[in-house]
Image (tube, rainbow, N blue to C red; front, side, top):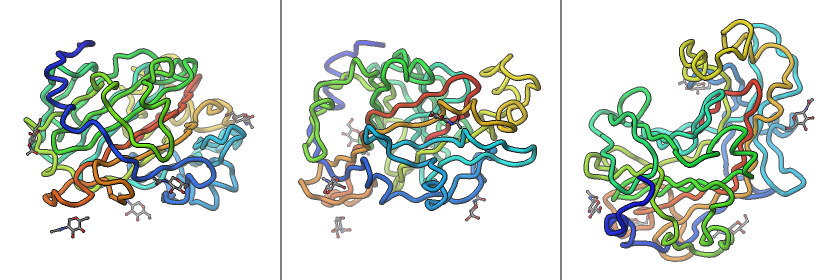
Length: 326
Ligand SMILES: *[C@@H]1O[C@H](CO)[C@@H](O)[C@H](O)[C@H]1NC(C)=O
Ligand SMILES: *[C@@H]1O[C@H](CO)[C@@H](O)[C@H](O)[C@H]1NC(C)=O
Ligand SMILES: *[C@@H]1O[C@H](CO)[C@@H](O)[C@H](O)[C@H]1NC(C)=O
Ligand SMILES: *[C@@H]1O[C@H](CO)[C@@H](O)[C@H](O)[C@H]1NC(C)=O
Ligand SMILES: *[C@@H]1O[C@H](CO)[C@@H](O)[C@H](O)[C@H]1NC(C)=O
């Protein structure tokens, strides 16, 4: 549903619409507070080595470009022999529930959202959700899925539109995720700064709206970490049926690794994130330092935090990476 019932929308969001900034990451200091995985992908079994911090900078897979934006990319300059992995970037992994804000594989055209939990958390689609739900049990391997319907949320279309902005709200009332393509980013975001608070009242309905009626959020989600990574093939993008469905006809062997990882890297020229900033907000008082966690402590700074991801430019064209972002 593209236009929500206003009353229902207000029910969810009018209670708290103003958030204070609690953290921000951008430019040369972006990487200071992030961990680098420094190991091959033993999580989704992709054919990559996520470099440690020193190697990531030396090999220029983590850098800040002339525009001052952060680049996180796949090695597109090494010839990878058969049986070896390609270098990429991937900070560490969350536990205690997982919120997938940006996730796409191969030649998918649209982003998708997912929650991953232990059994007992279900997605009930409320009217105020613009995306399309496809799987409601968050404990299934795919997670509870919502597909983005706004055009240009992934791949070359995303880049051609100038990228866009994602925002995720993590709250007792639910988990809500928004996406705007560049031309539609609301004024509250375009006018925000690294020190200003933000008001959600011009945001419209979320793309994915996981309300708490069939998932008691604090029982399934512990403290969250933000993770940005690009992996190649592996147990999602590289599954034979997924690979053929999303990359059919684009490689000679029909096997993700052989077609894409082995050999020269020029098919990864456009496999990168370009981020202007990542900012975190909370309903706690200005100057609070919070962690993104919910708990029974309702007086602390941890109760509600909202992450806002901005100007994340993902260009995945040609023979592309399976990109998994948690
Ligand atoms: C934003 O980042 C800058 C530079 O890292 C830092 O000096 C400033 O305190 C940050 N602001 C907040 C609200 O975290
Ligand atoms: C992945 O490898 C790292 C480093 O060796 C290790 O600490 C971690 O436990 C491994 N994770 C899994 C899921 O195997
Ligand atoms: C669930 O969300 C509603 C608002 O939609 C809120 O009133 C209620 O307290 C929440 N329940 C829990 C258990 O947090
Ligand atoms: C790798 O890709 C970048 C663009 O992302 C391009 O500027 C660079 O020339 C490529 N490197 C090689 C060796 O092709
Ligand atoms: C609640 O959270 C605040 C801020 O994190 C902390 O200072 C306080 O000790 C916590 N209270 C309890 C009862 O855990």
